[in-house]
Length: 298
Image 1 (tube, rainbow, N blue to C red):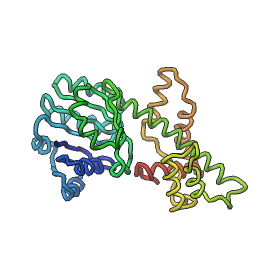
Image 2 (image 1 turned 120 degrees about the vertical axis):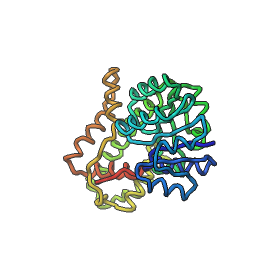
Image 3 (image 1 turned 45 degrees about the vertical axis):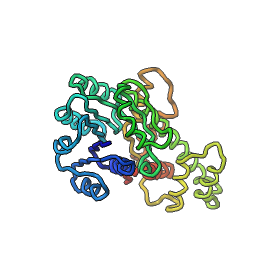
Image 4 (image 1 turned 120 degrees about the horizontal axis):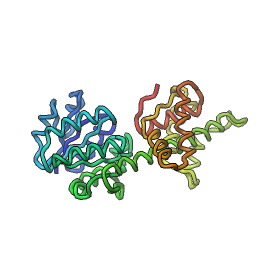
């Protein structure tokens, strides 16, 4: 089996490696050619031009797009629509807005090109642990690409969600929940840090303790434990916390459908306020984003 990956950032490069380990013949392209060449040393085939990559694939082709949502994805989907043939498949694995997926699907359908939207969670740890994957699109196209999702995901870690856009819709809500969970941890540790016992409390050990059978145990707490071990006061981090879009879209969807999401909305607004507010809670949030996703911190 073979597949191509366009975009070799934090996620794309590791996904390529995981597919290579699964025995997939992987072809890669990145705007910065050196990134592609570095993967060629690990078993992939690198290309300087997208048309060269497409030309090297055996029909029916499968191309995974791992680029930032918005302009970069739209640009490359358009390019691929002109290079691919009927029966080929594009898997959009970024975090695109689900309504954009529906538009891409409709345009590509007219050319006979399949389109799947794949919401992928796992961050920089996906290479080792696998990627939880939520897929939308035509079910027949999903079935054809399913072996790739099996290679990428941990056991029971992928799911066909439904029609076009549903994969990224589910991932959007996933990330909205993530915002709220992270905010709760940040606020809790901020209370500990500001308490009369602050000088006595070891936040690294508390993070570890709460993962031993506690009802709030989680992977996020494991990441916090590591962060506190490396930097007990998180002083190396700026408290500016960016939002990457999905939290906004989740809140907007809730507004459109009249569904109350006060906790997720509050978490989103806290990220906005962090732009001008330096507090320990925001450094906790920044450390979590860096730990699970490799996101740049200021």
